[in-house]
Amino acid sequence: MTAPKILVCGDVLGRLKQLFKRVQSVNASNGPFDVLLCVGQFFPNSPDGLEELSDYLEGRAPIPIPTYFTGDYGVGSAKFLSATSQQHSDRGFKTDGLKVCDNLYWLRGSGVFHLKDLYIAYLSGRSQSQSLGFGLYSDDDIGALRMLAEDEQIVDIFLTYPLACFFAASASMVGGITNKADTSTAPQGVSDPACCDPAISELAAEIKPRYHFAGTKSIFYAREPYLNDKGMHVTRFVGLSAVGNKDKQKFLHAISPTPAKSMSPADLRAKPMGTTLSPYTISEGNVPISKETKRPGDSDVDAQFWRYDVPQKRQRQRGADGERLCFKFTSTGSCPKETDCIFRHDMDAREHYLRNVCFDFLNKGKCERGPDCKFSHKLSEEGDPVRAQRSEKSCWFCLSSPNVESHLIICVGESYYCALAKGPLVDDHVLLLPIEHCPYTLSLSSESDAELEGFKKALKIFFHKQGKAVIFYEFLFRRSPHANLQAVPIPLSKASNAQRAFGFAAKKLGFDYIVMKPDNDRGCRESLREQFDGKSNFFYVELPDGTTLSYAVEDEEKFPVQFGREVLAGLLNVADRADWRNCKLGKEEESRMAEGFRKGFGEFNPTQ
Image (cartoon, rainbow, N blue to C red; front, side, top):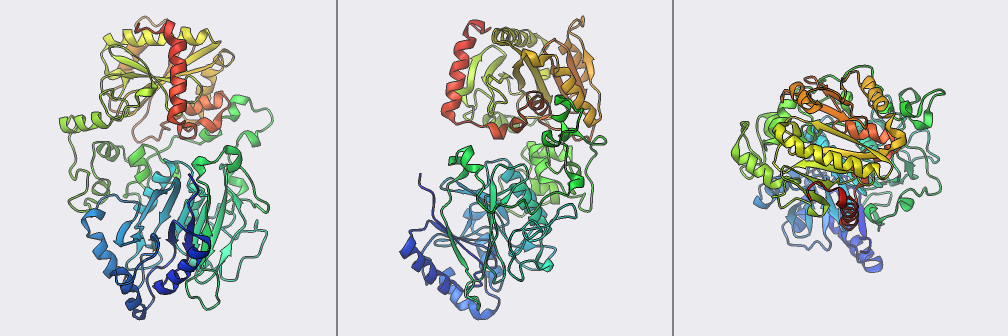
């Protein structure tokens, strides 16, 4: 697929006739372009521009190219956009633009969407703290964008408010877009502190887009590419001037970027000449201890677990906005800001969200999306058969679900089946999953344990033939959709260090395991059932020598959902694979790997 050709414009200010005249000229000489993206203020500053704007928005003048805008403020914005909001087709969650008229789409609030494989994120409007009136983004918009952007591939393009990112988000950051690391002098006016929006500074540092565009109040500024903290690619920031500005500064910019998902790792890592450090560099006092800053005398295992170096157990989050729910935590069970998050991490709200209750209803007590909101507006009861049927139908792991990825399945038994892990930590990383739709394996009857032990024994023999041991672990999250026991092979040479690695990570998080040896008369799984009350989260891991480590997570305690995987990533020196999303493969490659595992595992398969 050829890379899409895109035009990006700064503040339009209602001057659509002048804008589209320029667009048609550029399109004729260098096009055709696929889309026009407008950042900054889209509507005019005074009523004088309403007539020209109305001609286009009411269909009397044609819009020559699909156009998307984020600056939903200015004279006339409330009139035109209120009507757009009421259109039936635009209600509910819609992040790829609300249709205002033919070829014109409003990017409301925040969201992400695809354009010919390009991944585009946006935050529309101005901060509520900076102004009053129409066209403001909310804290919920920021939270939603964090969640959406983190759960997908690299963001190719990020669209935000004018001058929103030119200063650091907090005192721990060295600077902003124009910090002291810059090699050039920014135009006068770019560094105006009054235009700083700390929220967008934080978003830009977290999202790490390849391109970041913003309007700049009649200033054009193309910054040198800068490095991203813990990111493989560079970011290019471009600030665009306003249409019809008196100084004739550039207001239209053309790009044709190859989507990140189509680029090789080598191309993504390329550093253009003049690349600078990140303008959001963390000060030296806040730099975490990583492999690169390893202290003399640290062991290899110790150096891998710097992310757990916290002084005490994480507590329930409270702050200035502590009564508002964190969208990221509520929707996914974890929050990257952890103890720094100012919003509430509420497990009860999380459980209701998993039962299909509307987030706005949980957060505000009401939903403004109208009767077409696809979520429930009442606190659902546990054991609701309608919800159970809906959950099973949409579950990725239920064999009866249309969403099950059958090409990953290795073999199927009576109570369990084995499947290749999606985004595997290492080759031959597999899952043991109950056929029944249940949240954790300990919820199955003890009779089913015999089949589970048969699977585990077969995997141990299979991996031992390859010179490997195997580690089994499970995180029992209350009301999690479908249980999965992870089985990760490791080199035999690493097996003796496994318990030390898990112990080190536990020490950094401030807890101790219950340790069970394999010669326990009653068997470890019966003991695990006694420890797990079904009302709290629970983690356990079975080590190669049969020792089982378990921990019941205390109420309101923050515990990394991917704890087991992150510890093993450190043990195996593959820290970059701790997040499964970094390890996703295409369906063809997954099918090839699964077929290879089936052939090798055939003689050990306990279902045959």
